[in-house]
Amino acid sequence: MIKVVVNGALGRMGREVLKAVLGDEHTKLVGAVDAIAKGERVGSLITAQCDIEVKSDLAKTLDECRPDVVVDFTQPAVVMDNLRVIFGKGVRAVVGTTGFDKDKLAELDALARKNNTSVLIAPNFSIGAILMMRLAVQAVKYLPKAEIIELHHDNKLDAPSGTACLTADLMIEARGGFVQQGHPDEEEKHKGARGANIDGLRVHSVRLPGYVAHQEVIFGGLGETLTIRHDSISRESFMPGVLLGCREIGKYTGLVHGLDKMMH
Ligand code: NAP
Image 1 (cartoon, rainbow, N blue to C red):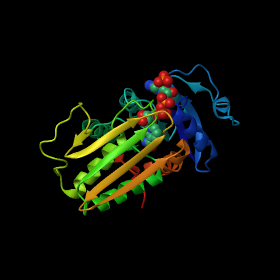
Image 2 (cartoon, rainbow, N blue to C red):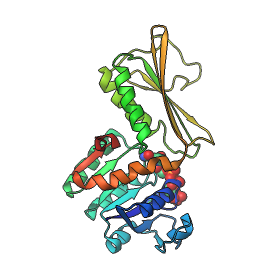
Image 3 (cartoon, protein in one colour):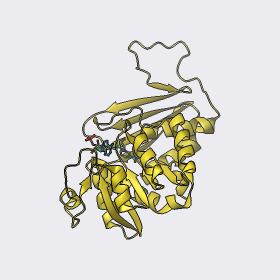
């Protein structure tokens, strides 16, 4: 059994992870942490039989519970500090929190290696989203002009989404770098109208109540378009990926970026 602590346990994703870890035969929930915890019991959060108390001190909880893995779904502003604490205790991490840039990823890889541990940073844990990215990488070799529209609930703090950034990076690598899209002299009448510009590939972020996590990759060719769309319609969609990450992360050292690296 893989011993798991859930960090961000009071959040929307954290609660879903508590349910998934408790319900899986390969994982054992040994602790739960949230910065704003006030003695809540896991069982009362997810209507299950579980008397574990949600604690507010991550370092202390790791000392007491000695987990194999911490699953972190917190916030972009605090996740780096969380990981420094987790690595410092020699524990592995499976991270769904988004908002990492290339420098932060490199820093985490070095830090994990220094502490002889490992971390999975997965901007998207849903199996369908990984397949969407794989298909986009295939398509962009033949249709290099593409734009991404990502749509999320309006409580999301970062934009573009981590999934959109990863999709763009993978597509740019597959098509060999910059491609001019749109008219070279085009002018934005309102700033941001053409979205973020990642090596010529435009990324548009929609934030509205009602959405969970969705993404379209639109390819344009001569007289044709191709659209690949993925929809996470509930947070359950991320759980098989989180559990796969918990099972697999022990086989690695350093950073694993993207769940696709574990999907063979
Ligand atoms: P959320 O509901 O705001 O949950 C975040 C939770 O973490 C909150 O309870 C928050 O408490 C808590 N928290 C903040 N700082 C903390 C700290 N230092 N230590 C422990 N807990 C802390 O957000 P969410 O919708 O669950 O999303 C969480 C993250 O996961 C976001 O970055 C989101 O983009 C990402 N996400 C990733 C995937 C994926 O597949 N990779 C899927 C969905 C979401 P407060 O209320 O005090 O802030």
